[in-house]
Length: 119
Length: 111
Image (cartoon, rainbow over all chains, first blue to last red; front, side):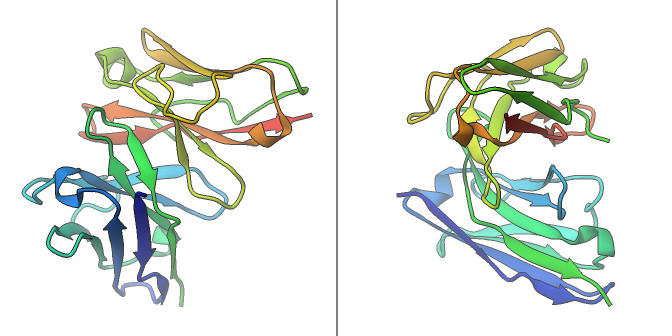
């Protein structure tokens, strides 16, 4: 069974940092591109970032570029999102999602972890 | 404001058919990029509902169908059931933004 379990969310002050993790199991992690998607309270889904299967290529939404870094450890089957210079508007539930091996669809999602940026 | 435009809400009575539109542009849907649809039940993570415009993952009822034409796509739900009440999102890739994009989401209410 495919499982994605996020952790690392919490309360942080503006300008601070958070590191999110996503532990993957039930599939060959190193074979899949992975994504982070966020959802502010009461709002819609917003794509944040993606990383290719070996970690050599990354892409970011304009709103987080230069502040967030996506990475992965294929030996540990874990995806990361390092978030720096956090702003109130970064407050959201952050989901990790697996990209399908046959299309650009996000075929499995974690349960999400809430990151709150507030003083 | 989302790159892909969806109606904020739709509604229908049990047993009826509803459609949800997703309008893009020449840099995303119109450029030939695939459209995928997700269902998000209240308080839960999104779930893939339709992939590559019109394909259903295993376990998704055939009451759900998708289509794509030009710069738009649509999700149709027939034989509405109470458990279909959820938020629905379309998603594609945008070459101008060099990234994945979602629609703003549509809240389906089953009357």
